[in-house]
Each structure stands twice: as C-alpha cells, then as structure tokens.
Length: 433
Image 1 (cartoon, rainbow, N blue to C red):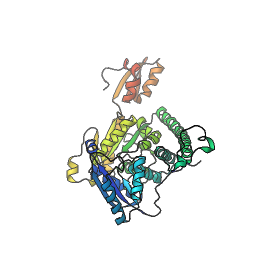
Image 2 (cartoon, helix red, strand yellow; image 1 turned 30 degrees about the horizontal axis):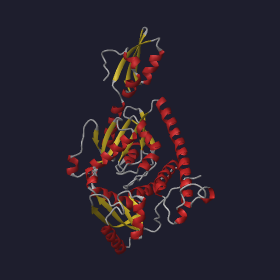
Image 3 (cartoon, rainbow, N blue to C red; image 1 turned 120 degrees about the vertical axis):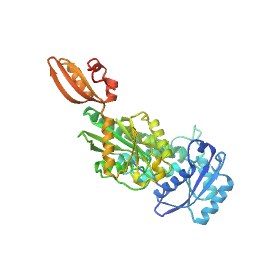
C-alpha cells in the first residue's frame, strides 16, 4: 500500500494572514519574534500561499481560548475580509480547542506553524522512505487533534452499545490512524535495519562518513553538489531538498569517504517530524565527522546555529566531532564578515569558490586522520597485527627479525575505545596525542 501524504489544498492560490503572539517567555528563550515571523512568511510562500498581511500581539501569556485576545480576533476578521484572505496561519502551535474556537469566530481555515511545515514536507517528499516518514509525522500530529461534534459522537464511555459496529465514526477514525501509524513504524524499522546494515558494511571496509547538517537553506545541498557533482535539487527556498543523499568524496590524499546530506533543521521543528525522521537522522549519529553548515549571511545565524546544536543534542549527536562551516561568504555584508568566527573548528567559505572548497577538503582530511603512531609488534601476534590494521591506515610496515614495525595513521575514536592491547607495544619516540 502506497503511503499517503496530507497537504493543504493549494490548487487555487490561497491568501493568508500571518498571526503571531509575542510573550516575555519567548524572548527569554532566545526566540527573536521578528525573525520568526519572517521565517513563517517564507514558509507560507514555500507552501504556495500568498501572504496578505501580518498581525502581531504582545501578551504576557497566550490566551487559552484563541491564543490571541478577543479584540485581536475581531481585528483579524476585519483584516481577512479586507484582503480576501481565506486562511490564517499562526506562528505558534495551536491546541484543538483553539483551532475550533478560531474557526467558529473567523470562518477561516486555521493553520499553525507545525501543520505548515508538515505540508511543505509532504510537497517535498519524493522517495518512498521520505513519503513514509512524512505520513507518520502527519498522522502523529493529527491523532490527538481529531474532534467531532454532535451527540452521535459522544458515546465513547465504553460498555454496551459502544463497541463493534456501534462505535462512533470518530473512534473508527482513531482506530484506523493508530493502525496506520503502527504499520508505518514497522516499515520505518525496516528502513532503519537496512541503513544499519549499510553502515556496518562501510565500517568493515574502513570507509569514513561525514554528515552535512544545518539550518534549512544554509547551503548543504549546494556544498554536496559542488563537492561531488551530485545530481541534487538546489534552490534558494526552505526545505528545497528533503530526502537524504549520500555520495563518495575523494580527499586530497586520495582516500575516499562518503558525504551525506541530511534534511535541514528549523526553529520549532515539530517533534513528530524529528521522531519520524529519526531513521534518517541516525546517519548523523553514526558519522565520523559532522559538518555544521551555517548561513553566514543570515541576520539570525547565531539563533539558527543554536537551533541546530539543540536538535543534534536531542538526537544524541551533540558530542560528535564537528567542524562549523560558515557558508555564503560571497553574500556577507562588511559588518557580518567581521563577526564570523574562524579558527581550528570553524571555516568561512563560499560553496562556489574552488579555493575555499579545497581548503575545506583539506580540513576534512586533517580531522579524519589521526596522529601517526609507531608500534613494534611480535611477528607471531597475528591478532595485534590485524588490530593495527583496524585502528586506521597502515602507512609503513617493516620487518626486523621477529618484530614487525608499523606506522599507523590512527582513527582517534577507534584507538581510544579498542586500541588498548596495542599501547603496550607503542614506540616511545612517537607519542599518541
């Protein structure tokens, strides 16, 4: 059965008002309301919606009934009528009751930020895996929001008359959705198992993996295409690509690695979406090096970088070796350029500059190559000789009677975890650092 994705109907261009509530709690949490609203506007445009205007309200706390105050509800109704808007898109996630109350008060389609992002993902999904993940996220979002009206939908208390054919349409829908969620999770577990097999195969062959992560529209896909000539879609829009792409990349020393482009992150990324895409995002957790791509020309780059770090931590990849790549150098203003961090763990580049790409390629090689170490191993210890080969790349091997001397370019993480038996035979003139 082919997975289904659920989209906001955009066959006729919708016109929408954007609505946001600004509270002290949001600003204390590091969210810039202006940047968030601008991002919502770009999300709406990406979904194919025409933005007619915006409405912002400052409140101490969101209104439990409408999110915005009653006076703003009346103002929104008048603005929607004046602009022929058919939809109101809210920058915050709405409860079931808030959606129902707003629909009754405004006679408009009510969409929140989460639903809008899910709709864009539904548009962008191309592979079977991507479609499954999007449907799972949409159904997980929809299930607690199912609601019905009328007495024929109220008999959910259990007992006689509430089971079998007598159950309500609402409960039937819930049962169907729960069953579909279980089936999608089963399919995704197969995806995760397949990915794990591929990772184990790469690990056995010694292939190193580098993952591209970053805020949406930071330039990850452009970087992948420029590096590997991958046939990936590149466009200046949010979530231009959704499905992960892995390509081989040859480093300066001739060694080949795999480079994986992952789905872009965004502020307030729906938890259901993160959960659904966990099988894909596990590629980040298994990577030997994470390239965190940041749009250095963005006015909100510090916020965006912080969002990515937070999601990486949630995924369990926060402590992975990381190189921050500040991209779009060619688009930076003078003031922005002055504030770009550089150093051992950060580079400032343009993905379209060949010299910058070569510099990045060299840094990747340096980060993946451990320090060279020399070992003097007994020729009879085949287990130690095999271990030396597993710990990294053997650069040189010489025989001296019953002793074999190896010069190994170590994988630091492998050596720290499994290289204990070799340390006894380490030659003192080449200390491991």
